[in-house]
Image (cartoon, rainbow, N blue to C red):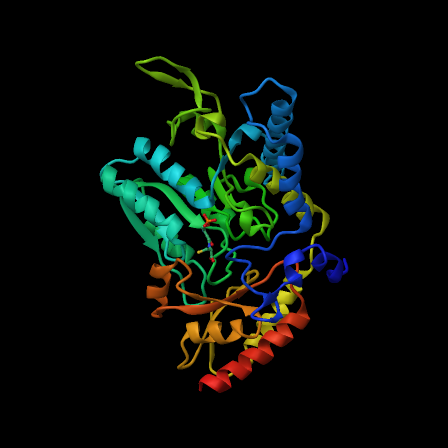
Length: 399
Ligand code: C6P
């Protein structure tokens, strides 16, 4: 596929950043959107527009169909054969909060362990800390190794009958490491523990098959895979979701309400209280269509960048896993990552700097912050060349 044909479909790439041509290297934070995704939201408002799940009139029926057909598309995208297993939330963060709260409150007790890794995003740490505070369970971590991988021996040592759930990221948003999800899931299941797999950084890049992985929960966000903001997904095995109480309550999720008490609707509506972000969900469907249509070669761009980055003077690249994708985090000796990001911004290049919502990992790495570049379907090797040239100039200026 001609990369220019792909780039033409992203109107924002024609915009300037500080009066320079935009080079967007922050897709791990949020991706750009093609015109088909932007257009699908417009189409939803122009042609469907009505409230879903509530209206008998034709417009409402069209809106409901658009929403529910997207649920089927999402299920297929991650290899689930049941759309009942797909819950729409506002973000992956909300999906994890839902599981920690609704599953955790019912299933965790004093002395139980929630097993995480030190490469988790705060969204996969804080909700567990909160539910552990409420239930008397505790959070425990597997530490990552120097090359940004997980030591499976440490996992074996940590697993015991107290570990009720293992919750970990499929792909690290700092190292870019692709964790051996299937192996970890099998080990956890053998131990009798459930598994939540955080797919925020994997769903945009890897083929996901939740049935083959056999994870109990899988979470991801539309906005990191060309889709709109405000939509997250929680996949859960239906028998587990059935057994969980609702997370939020109100309209849309009930079967029957009396003045005294209420009963819940069936899956997945039980977990979708209130009027959902229907136009955005519909837009997520268009993002999936795009990804199915244009499997891109950007992994080559990532590998090209990685090779060039290793040659930059004074650089430390975090993580060196054999299996990795799309993200490179780094520091340059004696230069603050914020300064690098700020100077590159004036060259039109968007680089993220900070702790990347991974403060425990920063602590393990003995750093406060780092810079990060990340790639997606629209990036080119020419952009990498400009980035490397400007990075070298920036380093000279700041040294
Ligand atoms: N990481 C990054 O720049 P939300 O915000 O809910 O869509 O995604 C949260 C989240 C959870 N897990 C992982 C592995 C993530 O990378 C993220 C989001 C962004 O790295 C924002 S900090």
